[in-house]
Image (cartoon, rainbow, N blue to C red; front, side, top):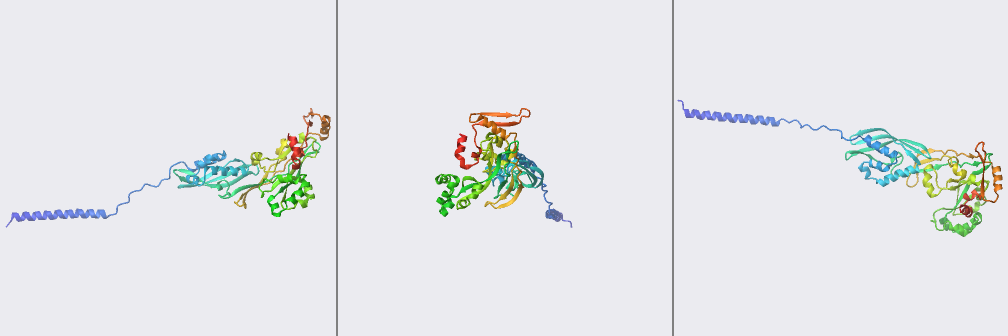
Length: 416
């Protein structure tokens, strides 16, 4: 018997079961989809940081170096490098090195740059033109880093000279030849290079040996000065300093060897100058003088040092570049305690040249005698060749007073 109500119930139950089954199938499918690993999200590919290449910064650094524009050089340093050295110290370092090495021109040359991410290595050749050592060239390296979006140099003193490290200094030991001579046309000397002895006193050493009175009494007849006059020369100085008090000849030094060997007496050999004609032809020969502190600042880069002579007048001044020769020396790095570490460049001094003038000393003497004690001057020239034969002038002077420290009073009279 067909029951419509029962039939409808079964139909609804079947449809409900079918619906639930379909939902389960869908959910199951979703679970299977979610359990499958998803592919990774694509990442942006790494790109080389943008900006100017390291070479541009390097070339700006080198261009400024060639112009001795150390302030602009400092601007090319990386911020981390600037944090380790102040601008003033950076500039002073370059100025000190240039002065000591007698650098007249720096011409660094870029070779290559290799960038690796945010670091770079630059190969370059340093080229220095110096007064005392000729040309100095080295192959060197700069290290660079990209900071704050720009390239900067990781600076070190080795970027100046490879052997110049952070705590070391540069020292030039100059070499020079004996000053050239001055002659008349016949080879008669007007000025000659010779050797003298610088006599210095060491007050502290005399105090330790309690022999100051003995030293002063022994030196008094040698220097033709009273003990008190000699003492005044060092009384106000640091007692541990060696104070130069006189210049004497090697002959005088030999004759007074015992007095000069007393404790507290220091003798050192140095180049000297003598004018064998004394006051004759004094205006022609001229004279030399030791370099002053102010002058040293001007000629230091040419290789001149303390106690060196410089022509002051006459042919001594005119022929300075011939008479002094070309200086040489040895440039080394030294430790803070003065230990020599490495030699950067060594150059021998070039021999000086003597001057042979057109003057005739015999004729010069004759012309000077014509003037006698009168004031005036006579100049005699060969009109055919323009050669100067005599130049006589009154009043005259003895050039030896400028090189003999014991004749200070005479020197003062000449200058006034």
